[in-house]
Image (cartoon, rainbow, N blue to C red; front, top):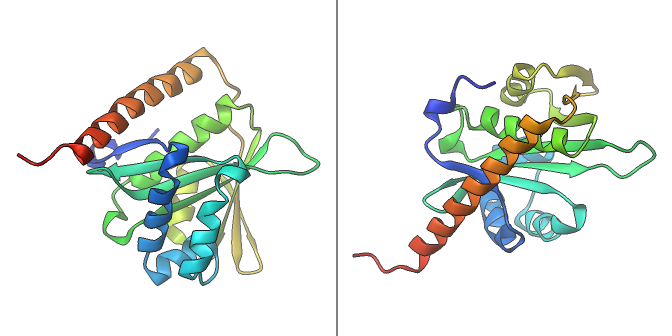
Length: 192
């Protein structure tokens, strides 16, 4: 879908449960405005730390955009509990120096494919009305946007899964595993 792939220099992959502290650190690096746009309100360090500590309990799939082993952007796909099964919410965060480079678009593609392959019929995204960047990314994937009391609710319906979508996610997971191992190796290897 994206025409901006060439501008993305890092690696996008799913986070392992042991990488939640790195995800928390990414959220803590967001400037005040990026935090407000991500959470729809002012978010303190304590709020972010508490939020990140509950990620695994929310059954979220988190994708990270890694540069030299550090998460610089992320996307969450969180199944919604409630009377209607097969629905999820998506949320995105990109550190200021990495914004406007196509990373959000790439992350959105991964979130949609993950939702598709898990038989999620509807993805919702809530953002502040002023968050034009998120709205542009959502529109690239044909999301329907509705303005509601200062917020924008985006909704999109992923296609049904097929062998190609499952195969592509499996290849991305394999590539992500290799990149994670290389990042881990770089972390523990002394510089020459």
